[in-house]
Amino acid sequence: MIETIRDETGTQCTLGYVLEIGHEDGGARCILDVTGAHVNRHDVLHGGIAATLLDNAMGATSSLTADATGRTPFLTISMATQFLAPAYAGKRVTATGRVTGGGRSLLFLVSELVDEDGRLIASATGVFKKVQMPKGGDA
Amino acid sequence: MIETIRDETGTQCTLGYVLEIGHEDGGARCILDVTGAHVNRHDVLHGGIAATLLDNAMGATSSLTADATGRTPFLTISMATQFLAPAYAGKRVTATGRVTGGGRSLLFLVSELVDEDGRLIASATGVFKKVQMPKGGDA
Amino acid sequence: MIETIRDETGTQCTLGYVLEIGHEDGGARCILDVTGAHVNRHDVLHGGIAATLLDNAMGATSSLTADATGRTPFLTISMATQFLAPAYAGKRVTATGRVTGGGRSLLFLVSELVDEDGRLIASATGVFKKVQMPKGGDA
Amino acid sequence: MIETIRDETGTQCTLGYVLEIGHEDGGARCILDVTGAHVNRHDVLHGGIAATLLDNAMGATSSLTADATGRTPFLTISMATQFLAPAYAGKRVTATGRVTGGGRSLLFLVSELVDEDGRLIASATGVFKKVQMPKGGDA
Image (cartoon, rainbow over the protein chains, first blue to last red):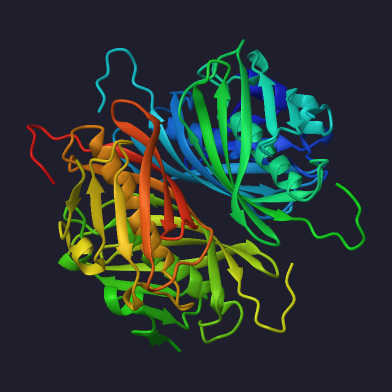
């Protein structure tokens, strides 16, 4: 069952994206309706906001490997982003995360950001680390 | 002479950072006073916003290689970001760009984001491409 | 029809990999039989050699977008690599490239390196640039 | 006191680079005399070998944070490389690593590869992980 997470963090409230969890493929979605509030000097979606959506999709997908709430905290360690095409105000864009590997504490992920016409806007790979809670041990 | 660019783009208005150009080292600065509007699930500066600041600093530094206005349009082609330490609400963080190489159309840059205590928060490398414009024009 | 390229460059002769072109999916393969000559301190495939295979697969895949020989020169501009699992001496590993976007002069690619058991060893994304021949123009 | 490590691994023997440790800045050097055995289709140093040198310099620099032998095992988790300029056969190239951050198990590093004329050939950032070993041991 798909669940939507809204207004969870300051950044989410500021930018207005939503997170979707519960998809069968295990990949969290981070969805934004692009407006003039998200554009850069070229009047297209700012690369930094594209990176934010890709990062959120990978982070929530990481969390879903730990439990179904999609909220178990993971930290972004590193992220490599490619900017393939512009996204325009008035379009909805969706980032979807996917785990490609990893182990006990580190996960490797990829994410793709596509617009509502299916065009690939940006993609990313990332390394995420599970936040160790007080009683957990960690290497 | 240092010039400050404010509220130039939708993203800049939404996030509230400022751009500084005119520093002697040729590196544009992108400065943000971190507030609760910029935090993630861990209540620290969102990695995507850190990436936005690093991207802006590198993009404006690229522009400064073309002319002193810091506004000649360059596109971000790819960017690799490392997240080293958390930045907290209440702190000012500054990203500074630096050109490391490149040629006629592509530039290589690095950028570091530090907080007001000099702590390295995040760093990035990026490839930027000069936008070719038939008869001038501006983004 | 699948064609195999051997001993084309000094690096290829030194490391002993082969390139395969002509696969229906358009992706060049770079194949290495891992031996003790390719291992690192951990006695597994050196990450730099993994990167070499991924780079070659993406470069040759780029070339295949220009003509069917797989030899049109493209330069690697940047590359981001993730190291997911060890590969052992005695195993054959294969890197396969895929174009994800790009235009006239720049291409975006991804590549995956898998061992003969289908295990994902490493993956990469890269930006490649077509080398402009004497009479070509370039942006 | 500067110590030189030669022929330690299969890859080192195959490619012929040397590692230097003991420099005052804490950065390991990985040095290669480029020959025809290291070139690509453009008859310049292969990007994959450049990546190998950068990776080695960062890995050995990581090891030096643990002890002065430069041999404590660290794994490369991810690496982002930029290729700035060609390096030619007949030239000596040197990669130098530097730690930029990290904690108990993960380190962040940067590395630059320069030729004997001081030209920046390639640079990289990387995430490295200390190998946890039950009772000591060595790789």
